[in-house]
Image 1 (cartoon, rainbow, N blue to C red):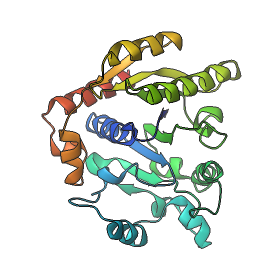
Image 2 (image 1 turned 90 degrees about the horizontal axis):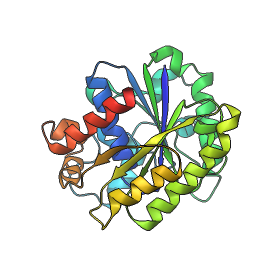
Image 3 (image 1 turned 135 degrees about the vertical axis):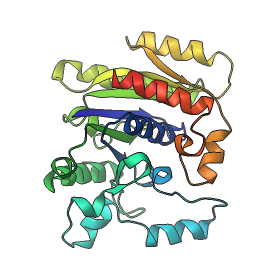
Length: 261
């Protein structure tokens, strides 16, 4: 089982990228489990039907009340649950689960990630579904103990860092890279490389390459800026499902192939 974590600044397109990579790996014949590690519980949204069309505040509350429970929602319910209650199948057969988080204003999101990941192990999710690849989609604005858990406790073998060429995204990526460097002598996850999600800003490829060099790793993928990403998500789908022959879909497949090795 290959275990990979993806980190990056919130809003950088990380969940979109991870979902498309998951779909590409599944289409290549691998059994893939994607674990969303974010209180918003939206990592796997566009692998599992999503919210298509116009999105309102009312839609959000209705979706959270009627949608499948996250791991933390099951834990708070105090009801017994097993692997089949927290994992559902999405596009291309990707297995999808979300850790969720505390109720707003009532707990620590990082601690919730630790609790949920430990619970996934405890109830035997990995044994029940026997994935070839596990992808952790992790919030990376703050690399606190909880959100750093996939890189610290043997959950992931490799970590890929997403960035754009914008200064705040590069700053967050550099912080994540520094955390990984601090763990190198402890046998924790290694840095797999930098992924550039283009925003068409000046010098973005050069900035991403310099960041990779500073972190002693490679720029492993460049994803073009594409309006098809938003169009796909408006349909409640990932790009590989909505526009499988597009340049963006090909770029995601190339990235997946490189990650797969």
